[in-house]
View 1 (cartoon, one colour):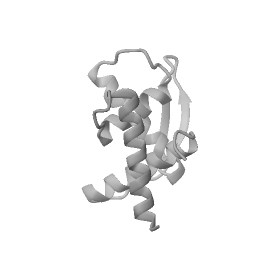
View 2: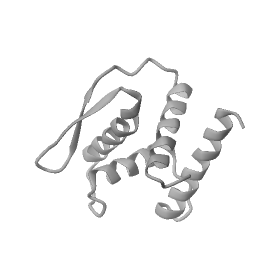
View 3: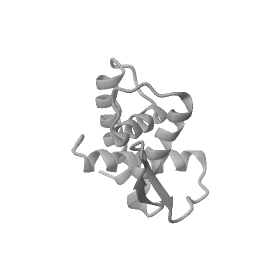
Length: 118
């Protein structure tokens, strides 16, 4: 099986499992999954967030999943429990499709590492 096929299968597994668990089976999109990772990483699972905090949660998720790629490094947790990251290397300029592939690969690796999928 090619690397692309394996990524596609694993991505579908992540989407199916998260959609069943958090969206009553409605298919979650990439942004929704990034948001869920941010909530997980913050650890405040039962809190309602305002719009600006939702963007911050997505930023936390992006930093976390791209950490193994060398783009970010964990810096500290503030007094409100929010993790902060520093940029180690600017993200490359990618086309929209390439960005999507990078994020899906990083998210799949995140869920492999957390043993949410195998």
